[in-house]
Length: 215
Image (cartoon, rainbow, N blue to C red):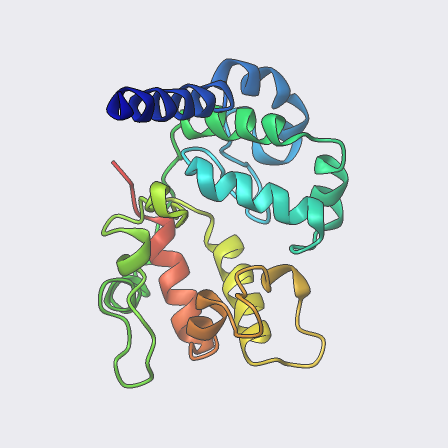
């Protein structure tokens, strides 16, 4: 009898989770305003706006919630999410997760250095390998909330790493919008890693990521 009750509880939890999961079709309908910056399928035409096609749902929803709460700052995005419900965010995440990120091209002069850092990090300075959290092809680890990076615009990745670095070093006027990986009073993972990166390393790994495909 107890096992039947336990099964009923587990089943109810699973059904509840499904009921509140994202709906890709609904998300496609809700994505029209997003297309202006991110493109109709999440492949933004401008390098200052991130590609969000193929992004993991857990990470995607967290970022939208952080914009809404102010934990991550961006005037455009905060205005866009102001009236969104959590279900809206899940629907959008489900839609973009079904899209395929386009591949860019890496700078041939930076490929070797970028790949070395992405796959092996820099042991002498304590920079961890990007592949450890983002996957060998930068496909991300969706269940853990680690974002997919493959094919991302190099300029956008550079901007984010520099902002993480400034926040991690606690520079005066460091952008608050990249402090949203912080846990408690300690610097977040990306802040701590980026704080040890040089300009050359940031440029190289961003270029390498732009040329990667998650497939």
